[in-house]
Image 1: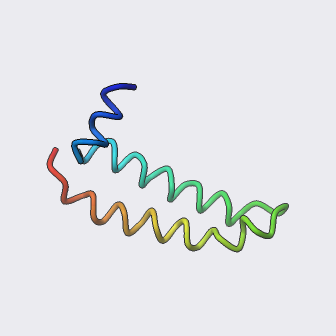
Image 2: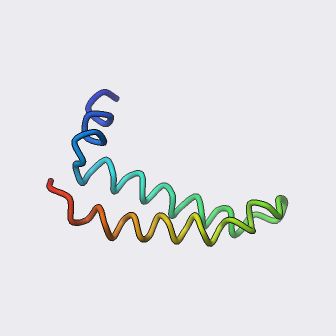
Amino acid sequence: MTQFLQGLLRLRRGPWEMVASILIGLGVVMLMQPVLMIAFTYSFIVTLTGTVMFLIVSHFPE
């Protein structure tokens, strides 16, 4: 856990790619769920944020 947090603070690629992937997955789940309209409403923004974040952090050092 501490290595993950240190990787986030040092702007390393691995931990930030994991966060971006989780955001993308969360956005897809929000898009497919039939219960909460508010989750469906923000699903595109969450997915887009995760995708842009993934594109940016793929240039971070290993």
